[in-house]
Length: 301
Image (cartoon, rainbow, N blue to C red):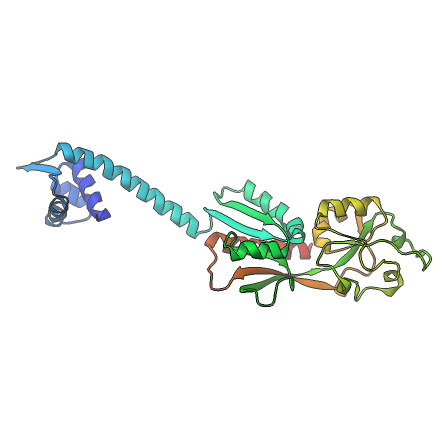
């Protein structure tokens, strides 16, 4: 059934006059008459009774118009929703993040979402890179973000580099390694870390205090809350991107070891992974743009 024909019927039902109804839908009177007649013949129903100078809805026609009006309202609502989805302002985005980018980026992004007028809904999975890959392959998420080189080489994914995250060594305020005179060379401090920080995390940093770090890390976990508390309350040293603990650094709860920030710092790429030959929804594309802006803002700050 042609949607235009429904609009023609409703216009005639409201105007009860072919000439006025034709003007309302921007048709000639004969064209409107043919449209109504064609629809009645197709449905094998009499929608209007016609006599000279007047048009009346039949009993069946009254029911038809009620249903047609309801259908067109839903159609208009559907078009509006599709327009919002196309603009990235409605619908649901399912995505994933490894713990580090989630710690660095999700709070601010979520705050922006909740304070906006957008009807967009997020479903964010915070898991390890391998678990996120499984969700992506099952098409339960559209994309995920994690550090580079954590996936199998043959994974059927495309990747987009979002930013380079610097690696720093973080300690509590008042840590011995922050003193002007370093402790005796024989003293080593425990290292705590997340799973993707290995031996490469130590390269490029000053040897005068690097020799004070135990290798390998004594504790490895993806629980950033635990790692934060341990760093604040013990002499542990935490190799982490400062972007993930920016608030703690600003408040003075944590400090960067000298020489582990700035242009000379070791860094790694933060990457967005999507399935090969899959298109992202407009909302997912907008979210990625927001992620890139947020990363740029963090690095600038």
